[in-house]
Image 1 (cartoon, rainbow, N blue to C red):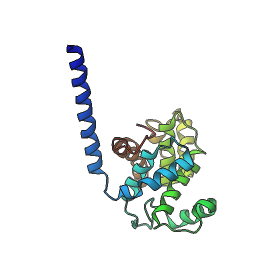
Image 2: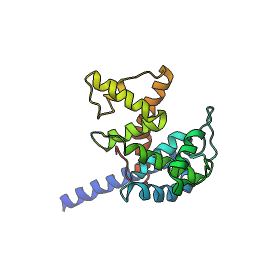
Image 3: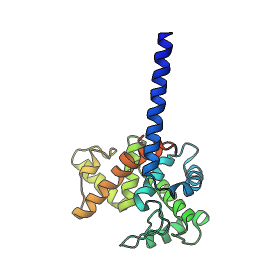
Image 4: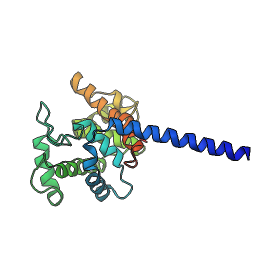
Length: 210
């Protein structure tokens, strides 16, 4: 009887903690995110399979635009996924069936572009595990695959593991400016180690590092 009561109490505490975490996560997630949740899930599962890391992509959109479909950065990046015009044109040519004409301020188009570009990058990056690979393709999304390749070569030349991002590749700068290097290193860290947990706790599904 005592053991049953203890187990019941532990279960209740776990439920309370779980609900508290869920409420906290939802409080930090912009309200408009829910409008795009179904489309993001559908697109992610079509590109990555039924076990797609939807929370990771949601965290990426959170970092990029805070879910503002009409967001535009000072340097010209546009839409939910903050894609630059030249990249948007290239992606539309690369994925003509999925993207068609360039529509960065169309939320569905922007989500498709973000997820498709992530998939394209991930297919070209080998890593120790999905979390490390996620950090690498996010770094590439932010700064370009060419920079990741150069950083990996430098890391390898210095004796670091070229298949590990955190604590390895992320320590090496193959030529970026100090400001760009700082932004690029913060980008995957914020998405994977901060925002991803919010979306996992809010029930959006799995993430690459959570």
